[in-house]
Length: 135
Image 1: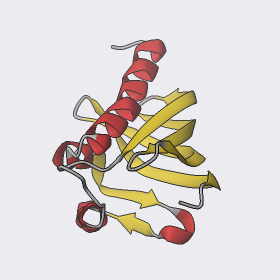
Image 2: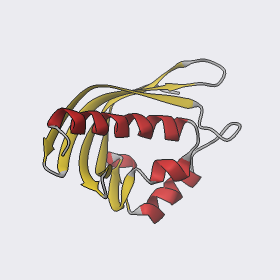
Image 3: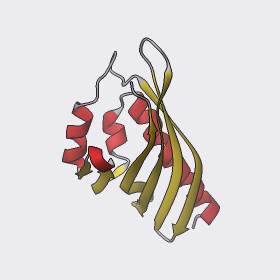
Image 4: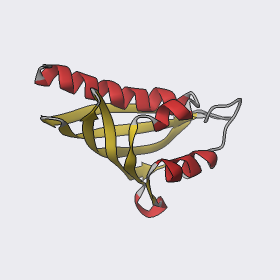
């Protein structure tokens, strides 16, 4: 049985995989980080529930050479583990590319996470867009 510290490390790795898979355009792998009935809540930008809704969201992402022109940077994560359930809060900075490099979003994630089949998965990821560029 894994210790709480090992579980927290595995959850932080889940959060990092989210960034790497999305930013690299590895959308099938990104989708597998969510349970089948997971909610992805973008506040006023919409709430998607389930893999079909997440796939629809992904199809709307503009790509350059198969990748979104952005990088997610997650930091200051606070993870609480309770058996096979967990919650996490983190800051997120999103850098955008293109003609100029800049910060497009400074915000927060609020996550609900569950361990199924030995792997941690998001059951809900809520994004708070605290600061945004006018890009």
